[in-house]
Image (cartoon, rainbow, N blue to C red; front, side):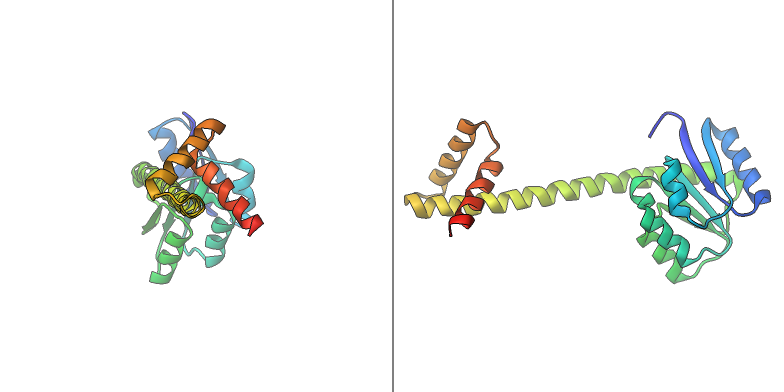
Length: 194
């Protein structure tokens, strides 16, 4: 995110939007754009590429949540949704769509900045978790490939697991590659030959 946050406020009612804009301007330096028509929300978010999206709707529809999910907005930026009332299914759908903060009882100007800060913090936490999960999955997949390659070397050369790893590591060093990359190449080659 940049030093000056760009914020889209989705608020169909101009009289409700103005106090929100004023509250944000009083709280800091933000680049604020108000969207009064939530139709084609995904397209509007994609065009503007804001740092944060604040949505204030009396009765949000599942269509708006689908628009958010289609835009991948919640995966790219914090989204805070303020609603006047909610049912259990809608709040769960909002969380599944990736909404960082879901506040019932509307957007009150005095609460906008603290909720904005919380949404950003929660978004960053989930972003770190997604990154760590992806890295863990990648490491696990690499480990599986290395184990398969070691098994192939053990069978072909009649060596134990430790020696197979030494052979694999030496080949990686000689080729100036990662052990996982050499193991993947070996497994792929064996698959083509077998």
